[in-house]
Image (cartoon, rainbow, N blue to C red):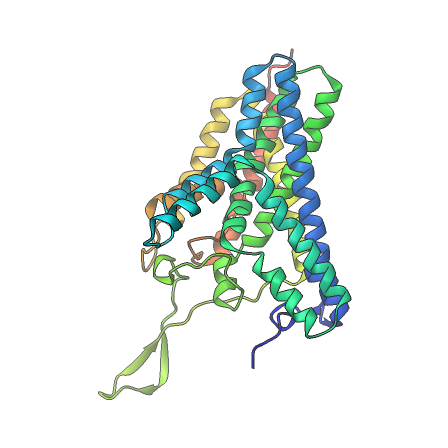
Length: 368
């Protein structure tokens, strides 16, 4: 018998069992409302800032703001085009190409459509009874297909993160004296950090949770994912030749419950806010020192994730992910070895770097 969609989600919060309605609200409806709101406000704010700068004849800053905004759909479009579906018919490939090109040119219709579908089906699930409710939940889960989740993942990493840094640099430098633009920049920073925090919260232990039963956003060949360093155990039994049998185990995790996701989201939002402010403000006074600190942090994380018992994931992926690890940790394409140690070292190094750079510009900056 097929399991219900509700049975695959968190059924308890703080060890208290959830009713069906509570589960529908906490796991489906509220996350849909929050994600949709953050996305629309973030996108609208970034577009407004870019257009406002262009209207002020500030071509370079306006173009850079809009380029960052359109970076995620552009990268998604390129990756989809270079990986066409295994179709043999020319007509099917041409139709697929036209659909992908249209989705890119008409951006952001595809993500808005996806968010609208999630809102619709989550609302339907709260008001229907089984078996129609189960059909609504299956339709909701169907909206989490590769194309949209791939885009939302990239939107957090190559749009929201860089946009927050770029607008923070403009604010710190006092680039504009227009209070209207400055207010929009503050809103853009906040919403961008929220979007990045949502992505980080969702993917901070993605590979480990996927092995524990979490539904995969996109299908990945497990032979291409670096695994957690296996632990060799001596079995109580013996093999046919009388020697102990070695067993391998893989660390797995359950998907976070709603309270855990909220706590992780708040933590990552505050951590990323402090991290970006520390680096940007210090870079305004001592850019070479900040560059050296970021380079050291980058190479440390790269050296940590580069070796693995079974080096399966590509080296370019690890090189790119190490840039992300300067700010946050997402476990995609590689399962962290000794994750507790890695997380501990990451936060210790980050906090020491933030504190040292802050003291550097506070005590030794050349104030005008």
